[in-house]
Image (cartoon, rainbow, N blue to C red):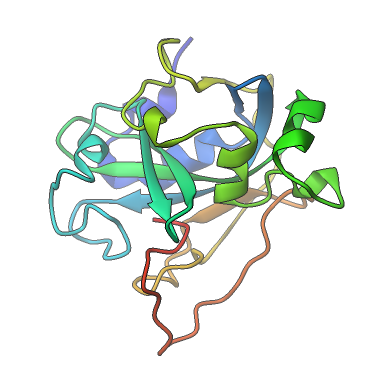
Length: 206
């Protein structure tokens, strides 16, 4: 199996994000078809990235190699997961924003209470919750079977992909590095950034 998204250099993380759409994410008895992602670069040109100011103990995993999970907590209770892309030494990661539960539906329903199944994984923290991922998944591989999350490519790539501004970030929020499968009902709701309003904790999407 060829992981083309993992072979792209860090300055092409947006292309890697597009390539990950439609892939299957499996963990904790649930499989999710990935329908929405966001790209983040650490090359000093993306102030919305956690790696914008350089390597720290928190973001070290973002600097590669590709194929590992970068997991961080938001609001003191939820987690978001990113797949590291690009060559070692250059931080780049793709946030797993939303997806459709395609296997283990009853298990997923037990982890989140929703009115519609389409909403089970319609957001980065929601997706992590239905897959039963935690901070313990940080730094684990998604490609060699040793971590809790495994990923597999789709039979066919999505026919149409849309792009737009990222969500929940105060810097570079208009960069069109959020990608989703066009017309898919499981994509998360877009909330435009409002200048002047700040958060005490990082928002989903970084």
